[in-house]
Image (cartoon, rainbow, N blue to C red; front, side):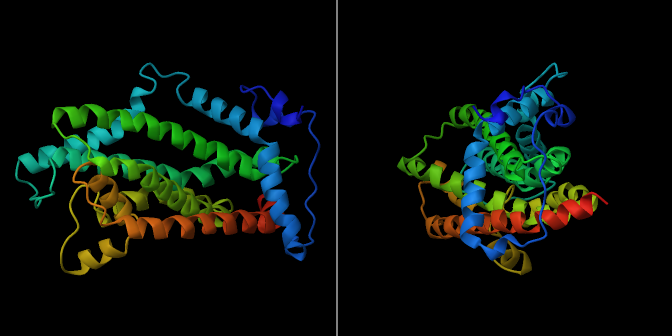
Length: 299
């Protein structure tokens, strides 16, 4: 049995460190043997699969340990976002062009995708920083903490989707056969969010400003994507939205669930291999820079 399997879910990082072997980071670059580097990354992830599950359970329990409403808090962000924009639209504060589907459904699908993407973007850095006390001292790959954080986002996304079920019944929308392509959209969303999140880890682990700035920046970027309004047809905003990599995921996901259009499928299929390759590269890059990060973080 591996050492990771014996770590109780309630243990803190300091308690985890008791009895496990210390890790020594060498100044020699792992790029000297790229084949060995690739094997080590995937081998360590497989060996730490039980630790990933333990970390996932621990974080999930800690999140709602002293909460009366529990998982209900996960449902509130997309519901509240939808409520606010419905109110603004009904009071003529904003004017929304035709969306091709009931506007509440348009907003709630967009909110679910956006909330999940925002969590995916923040999760790698948050998980990496939370695991610093462990992998700075022990032979525990930082990818285990990142994977556990992503697993929690997967769970929260499944909770988010519960909101969509009554919405479809309420507005009497029957999903067309294109709903079969939704797993492709979900894969693209998770791959893109994780890739961008991993990109922030090296710098964000050294400067807390990055982690502080992400939620603020995401609040602004929400309006640069067709989350609560359809894409503009002309002007600078139309150009920005069209180049936003999340746009085909948002529009394609909505269309596959409501109108049956597959107009965005080409862009989505392009995003998947590009994002997966970026994840692979960033995982290798993280291993390469780890000795330098540990040296800087330990200062």
